[in-house]
Image (cartoon, one colour):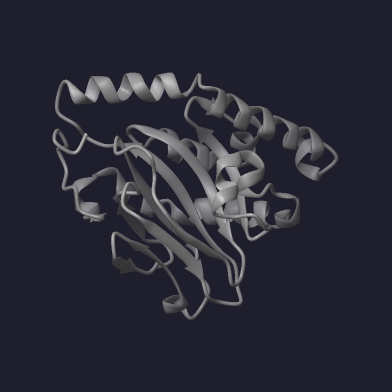
Length: 226
């Protein structure tokens, strides 16, 4: 993947490489407004490891909540209806294969880990960054960065990385995986593999777990309004 990459293979990448980033940032207020409604049900949101069981190796408490829209072929139509502007924005990002709100509780630390596949890049749009902003951050390949509300970070999760929220507030980003721009034939191979992953037992299990969560929250106002 890295040999055929059309973009730098550094831990962090310049946002200027991706023209869609500016458009996403221009719509951050709409996403934040929909997020506010989601956070009113924060205690009922699933932990990341409740949906994706392999995350239990890096998080086994209630400190990392999620609200999924997209995930390798799975689409939560109910959550997309609850946050239509966010869903439309995700649909406008070229090559977006995963999209969700990533919600870190006060004091939460995600230990060093790395992604298994260099065919995707990770994108964060900072939606809520408690003060002091310097107390929360992410380290990728030994390089440290901090979120700025309304701004973006693009990085390669194939490098060892960790993240933390050292504040007393809740930190939230719109978390996406997007296809790495690749030259042929690697691009075709990458797309075929991503499509195959969508049918894997891992993704199907995550889908079943998410649908089970949906059933558990039918009594909430969300469920009643849909």
